[in-house]
Structure formats: structure tokens, C-alpha cells
Length: 91
Image 1 (tube, helix red, strand yellow):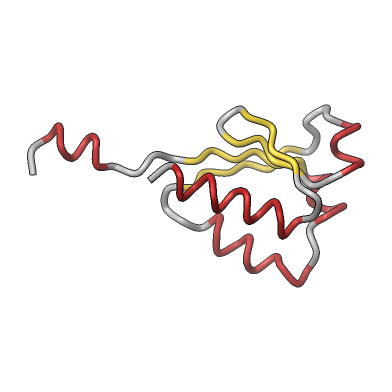
Image 2: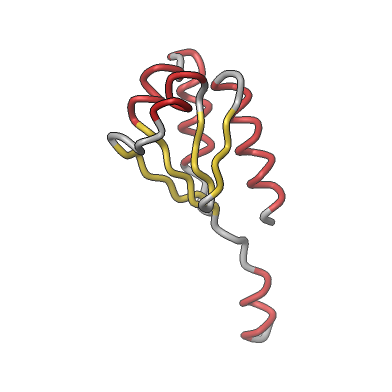
């Protein structure tokens, strides 16, 4: 495989930023392992920030900032499904 083919064949990285307070508020223990499994994939980069200054959104629903785009959901499982969908679109 030549260099250009390798370059374009690589999976694109998904960069996800979480708010610690939002995770504490909405992420339940029963799905933490599913998040851990998803976030440990090689094309996923994530960071947790103490606060992202999105207080109104933070109080209302779980969210993440994915490649600079705000993604919200009704619950943590729905957010995970949206993240997985975005990740599959990046391949």
C-alpha cells in the first residue's frame, strides 16, 4: 500500500469533550462500562473538563462537544448512541 492510500485509509479521530458536572449529574452507574468501552476505542479522543460554562444546557440534559459541535440528548444512553453514530460516520 502506498503512502497516499494509507493516509486516506486512516480512520478519522472523534474528539469528545465532556463536562465533569454534567457527567456526574446524568451518567448512571449501569452504563458507565458502556461509555468506558466506547471511549477506549483507538479513534476516540476525549477530555473531561471541570466546567464548560454551558450551565443552562448542563442542568437540562447530558451533552458532549464533538469535534467542536454541541450534541445533547434526553438521557445518557441516547447520548452514547449519538456518539456511536457519529463515530461510525467518521469511518
